[in-house]
Length: 183
Image (cartoon, rainbow, N blue to C red; front, side, top):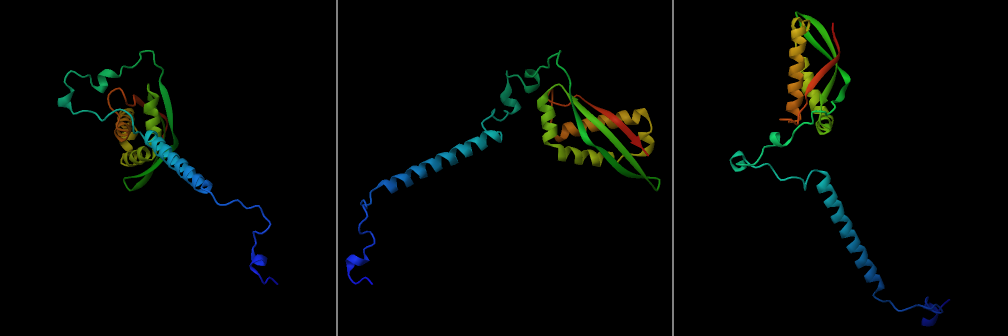
């Protein structure tokens, strides 16, 4: 049993260096590195989410002598069309004369600009929602005619362009029905 202070000194016999400011330097360096990482992450997120891009469009009165977006974007006459399949197929039921009818449509959209296709793909939940509402509001007699199908195709094209806020040359060019079944 230890009875003196010498017996209770646990550091006795060890070569202990006196405490220096080295621990404080490490904490300070770690804090600076953490702040830099946070700043780099915030900056990366800012640019990834669309910040740092072009400035907001200027109002029409301030655009005197400046070309509009439609005038600036010119399509390459030799550009190849880009197709995007809207899958899975749309399966819609609707009521006609007290009977339940079914409509199954497979479609592809086409543009000459990959950015438009990417925007459609990024907004797919909203696009599908609007198309389901549009398709479920159809009637059987009009879908049985070629004119009715062509009118529906134009409505689908307008609906998708509206959802993705496409304008001018930055829009879908066409919609193609690749499968169309009404029962």
